[in-house]
Amino acid sequence: MIKQKATAGTLESSDIFVEIAPAEAGAGISLDLTSVVYQQFGPEIEAVIYDTLKELGVADAALTVKDRGAVDCTIRARIETAVCRGKGEE
Image 1 (cartoon, rainbow, N blue to C red):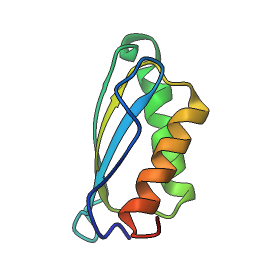
Image 2 (tube, rainbow, N blue to C red):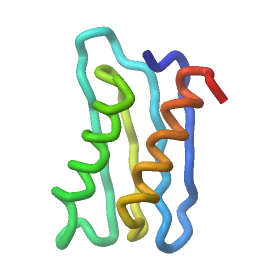
Image 3 (cartoon, helix red, strand yellow):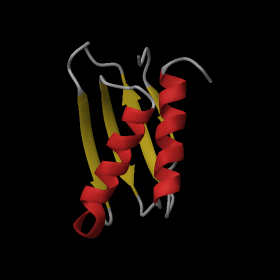
Image 4 (cartoon, rainbow, N blue to C red):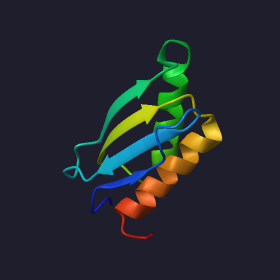
């Protein structure tokens, strides 16, 4: 469960900035994604984000994600870091 707003990543090239915030129980995942490569890879980026959240047991959260061309492993790392910070597990 996400307890507080948290961020991970940067807006540098080849990175991704993730902000996660608590959401009401049962609200699901709200994703606001912008990406410089959305035309080519939008669905794949979304899939990595949703899969990572599912693996981490996050069912309710609001995310704002700004991608600058990050690869899958970077996306996963930033999501994991934001979730840990949002849970207060830093």
